[in-house]
Image 1 (spheres, rainbow, N blue to C red):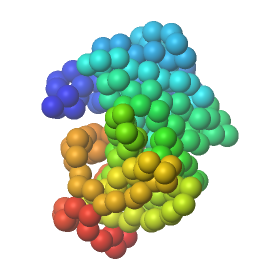
Image 2: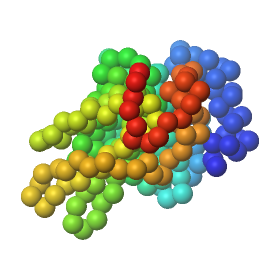
Image 3: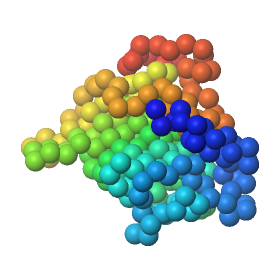
Length: 224
């Protein structure tokens, strides 16, 4: 897996050893942990020593990926993705992540409420591990979200649900022909525990199962 490759592990170790985002922001050092393939930031080609700031528009090409850290949050942007990083009170604070296409894995450190927005769903969180992917066909648009650990609120124009889990609880948000969005339970797909652990390590915050020393059933209850 990509996060087990020697180059990736070395990059992550270097990032952590140099003090993470707080040091990079103070010293104008890159906050990109890994870049493979092609990525654009605000329409310009992103270089491995570049910087992603809140307020930027990010696009990744085929067979590409981008891992970066902003403040107390770490993200892995998958291939063929487009997202907007809305600015919070400062450059190193994310208020909202707007995923337009593709997929993103994120570990949000604890703090004030932040949002992840897709074409069919808004997710409110104060800190969690999360995977989100958008599926589009001729008939409808579907958003998939997995609350890997923590607590989130899922909001559509006609529904609101709270997901609380310490080991993966997922939902589909599917747009119907009448324009309404239906929320339905889902199983974890397309992401791994190790990927979440890798991102959490970048911001020095263990996952829920690393804290408890056990992994529960997917879609199981959350006691934290």
